[in-house]
Length: 47
Image (tube, rainbow, N blue to C red; front, side):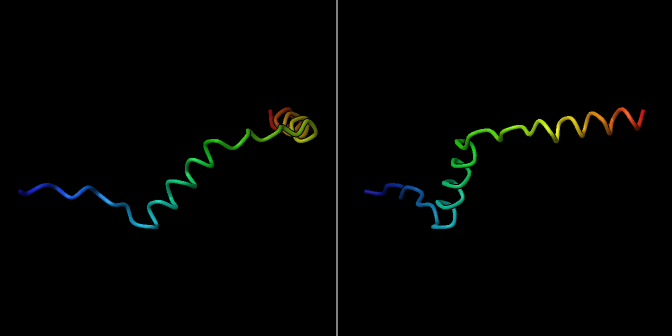
């Protein structure tokens, strides 16, 4: 009886998968209104 042995991920692959899922599940970064105003002013100056 020959059967295929299932794939077993390495410890590094398990850690990588866990961190990639954690990044996807993290809450979105809050926008800083002061930084937003600063960026708008910079764009206005450049144009």
